[in-house]
Length: 450
Image 1 (spheres, rainbow, N blue to C red):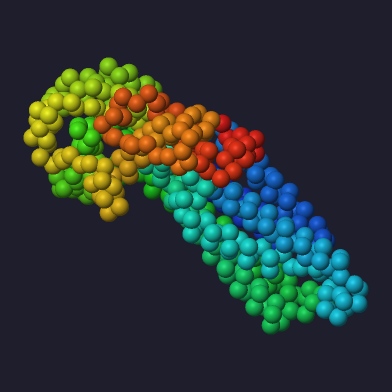
Image 2: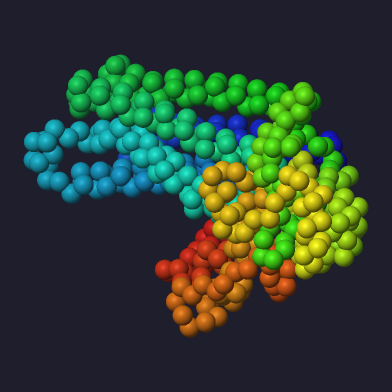
């Protein structure tokens, strides 16, 4: 198991480097294609590469391994819109009268220079993605399928970080190429032929920039792997072959959380994972594929004797995508006020918070990301289950109807929180415009079946 964990993490880091090489090389290939083919074939090169990358995305979704495919997706959009603009230029040139072509100084042999089109489009697409941030549809879909980065451990957080970092590097290169190529085109270029200076600015600089970026990314991911592979003291991501049981303790529609002050630091290091409020009931176990409810209850009562006799329900697990530690999530309902008081008396750093207080702490970045993910999943699946049927049709003839949600009732809801389909229903349902088309596209174009 330990060797599998190391192998999965190594493959995950290598996949990030490989995706950068594939995506950047695809964009460079379109820019340099006039050196090999006639410019009229450049849009076809872009379309072929786009289809290949889109196919890679489909295959990546079918393989039961979590990988960040965001660079592939962004590159497909860059290639698609670049091909569209090139085709528009070619068609518009063919529609012009020969005399008009001469008067405009258009060179039929050089209808366009790819870098002048691809670089600005790449910059625009990257800016579009970065502006959307975590709400970018492709990233939201990734979270629906593979859980949040906090629930996926080392690889999840690495993918979340590096997917965005690669887009930033691509944006920087696209802006640099856009400025340099268009400045030269406006000031120096003569549309008669390509001299040595033209080739340097339109083809040489993109190739040199690709080499620099490739070296930078290679050194970056080599450094990340070497850093990860060290046994650093205090690293909470190096639990090895372990499992973790987490319990959300509920009483009177309030959630029990532990404040970070008591555990935030020690004599030797600062525990960054204990600087935010989290559930007080978290148990680390030797690795196991499943955790039956009766065993989970036994572990909980052994850790918190004051909670003996409370109702416990299994919620969901994160055991498929986390190479470091699989997670089992449970909810604990306390109906006895005396038991609730005994818990807070045994844990002076714990407190009961309402959903309103929880949201305020969340907005202030005081909640642990893992706890925030748990509450978000519970709320999202519960509201979808209470509002829509499994196909996304309304249960009530009221558009945008929102039922009430009580945290204390979650343990009695007849919804399977381990079923990701309810998370999708929350995003694509009868209250969403074109929801049938979106559903068709998801199943038959994107190939998603969760």
